[in-house]
Amino acid sequence: MITVLSDALKRVLDIAVAAVVLILTLPVQIVVAAMIMVKLGRPVIFRQPRPGRHGEVFTLYKFRTMRPLDPARGLASDEARLTRFGRLLRGTSLDELPTFWNVLFGDMSLVGPRPLLVSYLDRYTPAQARRHEVRPGVTGLAQVSGRNSVDWDERLQLDVEYVDRRSLALDLWILWRTVAVVIRRDGVSANGHATMPEFRPGLRDADA
Image (cartoon, rainbow, N blue to C red):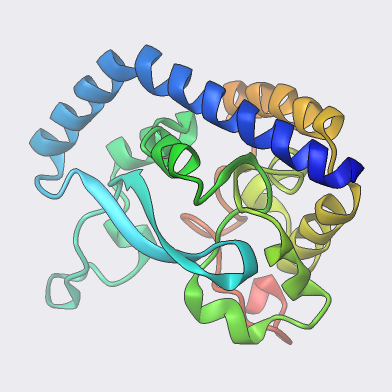
C-alpha cells in the first residue's frame, strides 16, 4: 500500500515538474533547436526506441548531438560523429530537455534507471533485468554516482539498488545531487570514450 501511494505521488511530481521545466525552458529550447539546424542540420530531435517499464518499448526524444552515421565519410564511431557543439549540449545536459516530454507522456519518470538500448534486453542477468521494474528516469542513482564514468557492472547494480530503495525522499536527494553533477559536468563520458562503451557482458569496459 505504501509503495502504491508513493508511486502515485511520484507520478504527480513527475507531471508537475516536467510541465514546469518544459514551459520555463521553452526559450532555451528554441535557441538550441535553431543552433542545431545551423550546425548539424535536420533532424533537430533525436528519436530512438528504448525499453521502459517491464521492457515495453517507447520512443525517446532528445536534441541531436551527432552527425549522421556515414562510414564512407569516416563518420562511423561516436567519437567521429560527436561535434564540439554536441559535446557542449551533452556536458550541460541541454540535449535532455525534450526528454521531459517522455516524462509528461508517462514513458519515463524524473528519477529511475536510465533507458538503455533495446538490444541490451537479452544481455542482462535476471538480477540486472530488475531495473525494468520501474519507469526509466531522466536521472538516477547511477547518474549521481559517477554518470558515464561508472563501469557497467556498478551502474546496473546501482539501478537495481534504486529499485529496492526507491522512495520520494531518495528521489528528491537524487534530483538535488543531479543539479551539482550537471553544474560540474561530472562523468559526461566514460574514460577513453566519447560517450559510453557498448554493454557487452563478460568484457571489461577497458576492452570494449
